[in-house]
Length: 216
Ligand code: AMP
Image 1: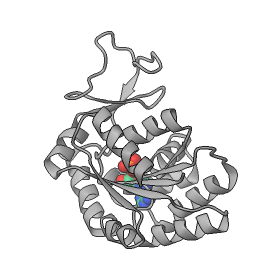
Image 2: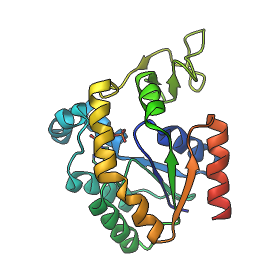
Image 3: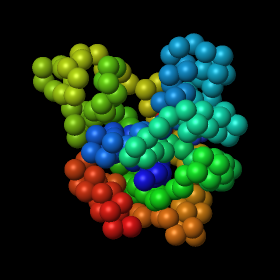
Image 4: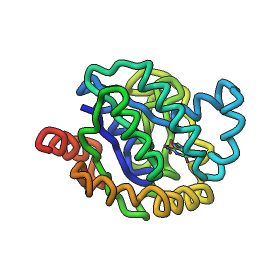
């Protein structure tokens, strides 16, 4: 089963994608993670996208489509792919459709995660991740354990994303509403859309996603 997790920054796409990887043997394809990895390893691509990412803008369609194409043609995923943070524009959505067709696959479902703007700001400015395994924590809803060790891998180093600040978040939200939210109508028209309330606990949202995937 190949699915898209669609939603604004802070909706919980990454957290829920990790759940699905564990529970359904799926492979998470996050263009944000790929771009951050390119920056960390100091590649030419990483240098090219750094300023755009920090400012909260979208990198070019060409770059992210290239990253996804590389993964789709080299990775096997027995349980299917979870597209997390991709597509973010109509051009990317068209390109994904073509890529899947070319590789003999199809898109099975698109999960739109709804969270109101105030909650997004609160979630994002309180968020941190484990440097070792990427487990997501939140000062308010899921604080780092009292012993300072990640509950998933035991690591003791945590980081905040450079673009998780109020200034950059404003731009990311604007980009979402201008360029990404039209995808909700696009996938509705294709009969692939399921909407879940992203405001509940991590378990509640995971259950709602499971129901959408299993019942269609
Ligand atoms: P994310 O981790 O998905 O929030 O992505 C972090 C940043 O990476 C975004 O704010 C964009 O600058 C860039 N990015 C990630 N995915 C895409 C995409 N599909 N299209 C354009 N830019 C992207």
